[in-house]
Length: 547
Image 1: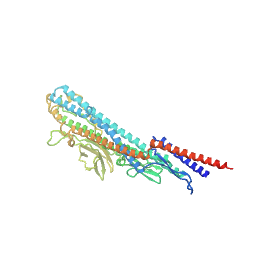
Image 2: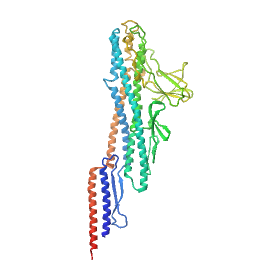
Image 3: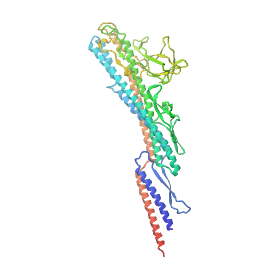
Image 4: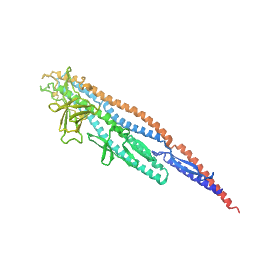
């Protein structure tokens, strides 16, 4: 009897020690990211005897795989929205500033034109018009520079995030291997390694949205299109590379094998910081750059056309009032070496029945390719494709653009960004107020041409895009609406994430009050079993002392 009591007490003492150690480990890791609360499962001791003591059957993590997957998905969506909101807010604040925005400067410029119209012979009025034109050009340049810096920042950030993704997938693959080896060697669950792997998956989801599957204790992780990032102990990297169609952009490729990258559609990289960056660039930043450039190009082309119809104070024909760059043309990396494409803006025109110049420019980008002996122009905004035929001079025209291709071979292509960089090139061509072509004759009081220039403010000089004010208001409104929509979605997503976090913590998190209560309970458990051992020892001594 005494020996049975002793062995039972020892088993209880060992179980209590394990429970206290597990309880202490929970308390110690209460603030450890990714730690899952551990519990001890007790069962009757081995053997057929009804009084065989107690044993620790397992130490397990308290997790809910379905809930954890939901939380990871919510965190991925939140990270994407946070990235978009942070960047969109910068553009929104820039464009909507009532004091530093373009709207007041355009108003001041046309007010100065009105001043010249009132007093065409006044040198001060002419110099004031030049000054406001310089201010407008400077602000357009500044806005373009700011957006270009954001674009460069997005490119750099994409590279950084891709590196973080690769680090995470490498870590997960390594943990897959360690977990399998530990299970095979000890037959036990490596709880700490499992926590580390789950935390690495959560961090990966915050970087890019992925699908996670578990088979035989190993995780397989893939992108939305099924491309595997982790397969057991193997991982496949993503690679940030220069877009072969557009050298100004960094895109993401998939490395199926060393030296064998595969291009990925940006729609396959949704969720997380990476998805947020790509979505912001494609849906917000590039359109804002294009529309700002469309405004600058339309203003310069229509103003120059009308200005050229007038006579300046020296009796000379009016020249260009504004300077403007040419559309950006980017050759594909695999083009024939001597293939070339030149693109320039078509001059503004006077449409039948209208008394103001206008342009047909859009804010879209294009890709010109030679396929089946035919020039095909794809609108990269809406995906429409048109066939173009050169005229007798080898020129092709489309929506305010004149294209001239030479030595293009089958499969060659060029990306055309008509207005992307135009705002940065916008400037004032004249530096003397006397060069303003205010009249239609050499008379100093002739203001007929300056009145026509003033009329451009309220005319639909940008064709279907409306007036200059309409175009800028549309840009401000579009960015503002996108920002507010993202903010609303982010708020809702954060609320969902908080709810899921609370639910997940109720299962896996460490509650110090509960652990403190368990600590007292297990301490009493330990003390009681120690008392059993002491009693067994006393009984045994009594038996041994019987003569």
